[in-house]
Every structure is written in C-alpha cells, then in structure tokens.
Image (cartoon, rainbow, N blue to C red; front, top):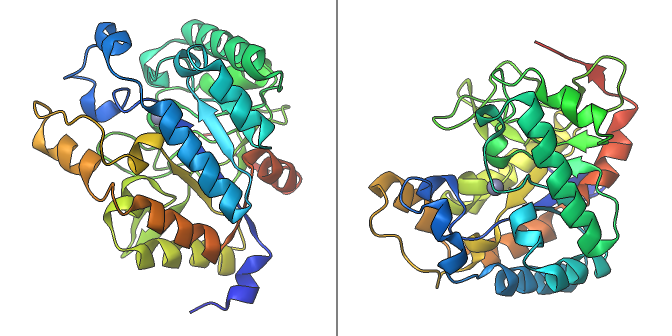
Length: 294
Ligand SMILES: [Zn+2]
C-alpha cells in the first residue's frame, strides 16, 4: 500500500469523453447514424451531474467532446467552460481514425474544432481519438494533429484489446512527430501477469472492483513516477438510459454493468488521488518526453 501523502503530489489527468448513450462502439451495428436525431438526448443532464460532482470535489477536468454533440448543446458547452474545465476534441461523430484517410481526418478535426471553439470561445489544443483509434494503421494521424497545431493527443491505448490497441506504443507520454511539440499521452495501463490492460477508466474501472483501479493508478504514480490518465463517459453515470435489447450480449454486458455504482466509485477515485486538466498534464510532461515512432 502506498501512502496517500506520497501520491498527492502527482497530478493525474481526469477526462470525460462527451458523447450520447447511442454513439458508442457497442451499439454501432444496432443503432444507425441516421436515427441519432430521433433518439432522446441525455448528454446534457448527465454532463450537469458530472459538473456537480467536479464542483463538489473541487477538481478541473478535460471534456473531449464530439462536434456532433457540441453543435446541438451550445449552452452546455458554455457551462462546462465557465466552470473552469478544458474543452477538447473527440472528433465529429465518433468515426474511428483508422476508418478515415489523412484528408478525411484533417477535415473531421477542423470541422469539430470550429464548432467547439464557436460554442465556448476557448481555444482547443487537445484531441482524443474515438475508441483510442490511433494505432499502427494510422501512421499519418499524429502528423495531421501536429499540422493543425494541437498541443497534445490522448488517443493511444498501448495494449492488445479486441476492439483497439497499439501494443508497441510506449505506456507514457511521447513525441510522435519529428520536429513537432505534439505530445501523445496514452491512456493508463496496468501490467497484470505480463499482460497490459487499459486501466485508466472505462470498463476496467466500472466493471471490476474499485481496488484494482486504485492499485493501478497508485502503481503508476509511485513506481513509474508518472501521472495516470483517467476517462469516463456521461452515459456511464446514467442507469436510466434506454436499453438496447437487440445488441449482442457481450456489448450489453460491457455497456450496462454497474452503471448505478459509478458515481460513488468516481467520488472515491477523485478523493484518493490528485486530478487536473489534460492540458496541464501536457505542459508538465512535454519537457521530459522522448521521441517515439514505430
Ligand atoms: Zn468516445
């Protein structure tokens, strides 16, 4: 067990991937994009609950937001920015980066950034790929982010997973583009019995006992002397969202397990560690980062 005082000095990155309950990879084959506008929006109520949680616990975080969502919820975007949180990009409509080419990716980024910046007046300098979809298939992606002046990306899961992952990538912040300051800050991983798992939130945090997440974050802070990168979604704190009974069982298990326990768990992880915005992390990590490319 690592002493709380020892951990308190490392600032970890707290992030929310802002998307609707129907915009997730788990339901992409059961809910057609054309239906999206007809489905009941829940993102605003859920984000307001998250803003309350962050206000109570006095932390600031980064909201990686879809352009599709920001364009429909301008007042929500302003509430998030006015509370002192960072607004960053999660792409337009959750299309994975490896489903695009460099030109389409550049357009997706530009379109999203304009909507985010118009809604809040805050400059966008951070990006997170939908479903951590920057990997070995997208050798051009970081270069496009650098060209567009992004300071950091948090888009790589350095693991093997059935839906995503770039197993060769470093576990901690690196410089992916020669001659550019762009920093990639991968999602936090845990190494358990020689196997790396994405341990910075998501299903690992929601479905498994809280002690495992606490162990993983403490280990990254104390042993690796690195900040952890944590993420969750507005739909994860919403047990009343409409159920998609036609989705595959595996997707339903992943999506619906422990939604009702999520808020209490989040409160615990926020209390146990120190948290801040991803742009603050990028600033701190930039100076010591090494160049890495496959
Ligand atoms: Zn997402």
